[in-house]
Image: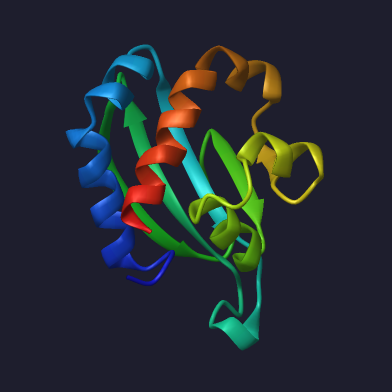
Length: 130
């Protein structure tokens, strides 16, 4: 399944809804999250792309794939190679953020901090889909 495709995005949202661990960890999460890939015409992303998840109290209420800049409460951006490393388990998201490989383009670390466990579950579920 191709990362950042409509099929991948729908499968991800469905898997989130099936995850009891995510539901518990994200019980108070309210807002949207975009996982964005930087523009790379050679890889099929001339304007970039993003998977925008509508997350609400441990559920994924919907998902959309957008071309270009994503509108979401939180936007995390990286190049495709970095996303692949994260989703294959070869790179931890926190390490990638600290090294500047993943960039929080919208939202703040302080606002995300209370949801650290939910973020871990988001990555864990994404790894199951990837």
